[in-house]
Length: 306
Ligand code: 3PG
Image 1 (cartoon, helix red, strand yellow):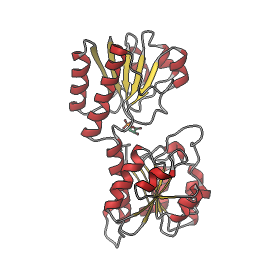
Image 2 (image 1 turned 120 degrees about the vertical axis):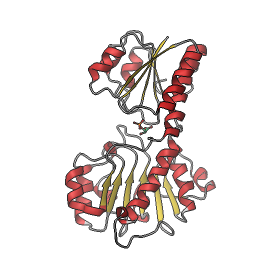
Image 3 (image 1 turned 135 degrees about the horizontal axis):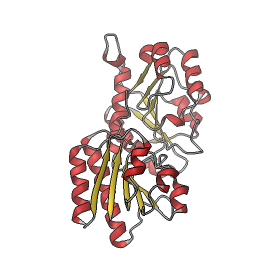
């Protein structure tokens, strides 16, 4: 079988070598398309592929249509909003992600962004510390749990809200369970987002929630740009000169926001939550193994479109 790795934002060399080794050890053929800039390049490369590994690369209906032999696509990472799942299902293509494999890198970045914004983006002036502050974690999944455990080391008080996780799970970790999303926002000096981008969450974080945050609070986004209602965020930051926003996914109005909100706003130049050699290796090798397991014994453990 031919396994194509298509990554606009390439994996580290170590990860690519590891992926290739797993594919070839299992008797398959490895192919790679890195740093491509147009979908047409992917359409050409995928024409004879049986399996596909991607990162945030968009696997659209057109991509699926251009791959008559495709049997499995694995998103090496957590968020799968870049995969057209109905298009995969219609063609009988198995779609998977690699949950948890890059979570540590994202969790560490969330903490790093909190420190960076609290210390005036490392420019002169008096900053503040994380110790004693309340951290609200929106969604207590793989990343949320790691953020909780790291934040405890900084002496933060942790709260979480996740309608899909039993309260007992959070309590066992020493995390206070917020009664509602509104409660989380109104009680937290920092709110960190770890929700997926889907029909329920897109545009769900806006003025009403953000303006409930206490004085000097900061919203931290290492999830997806789409979950933010940008006009609502801008309105809240404009009305409240104490609020801050720090994000790993530049908003559409990033330039305007940087100018308007100064040190209260920061966006990384390019999404880098999972940009560590370790996360690349974890997610890339897991993707390669999942494909080989699927071809060898039909394992569909991480299938998203069951
Ligand atoms: C994920 O959903 O796993 C992260 O956002 C990482 O995305 P990336 O592979 O594009 O860095």
